Length: 125
Image (tube, rainbow, N blue to C red; front, side, top):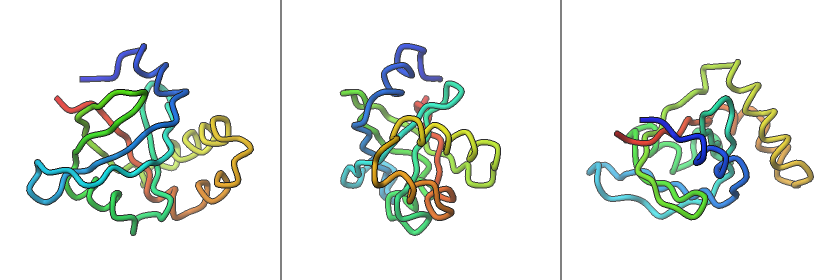
């Protein structure tokens, strides 16, 4: 399953992403965490402010799934790490610069820690 063009258009401008990865039981979700998101080449990405040590990031990678709230709707999703893909990192950085230009939090999100905690978020089957 993939995001529709209409969903991606809404996601590209939305600033309400909250991630809730599953706990170890694979069914119960954690407390929603608000984070920034961007759309690049018809794919949805997010980064953890605190890098790979972020608890939501660790749970997302370990469990591989959970729920998100974005553009006013809830979606069951899968999370996939892309931290070993420099080509994606460059494009995600550019999307962050464009979407969050002027924010005092932008430059920290472009540093090595958050870059290493970049995930692609895909709809669950």
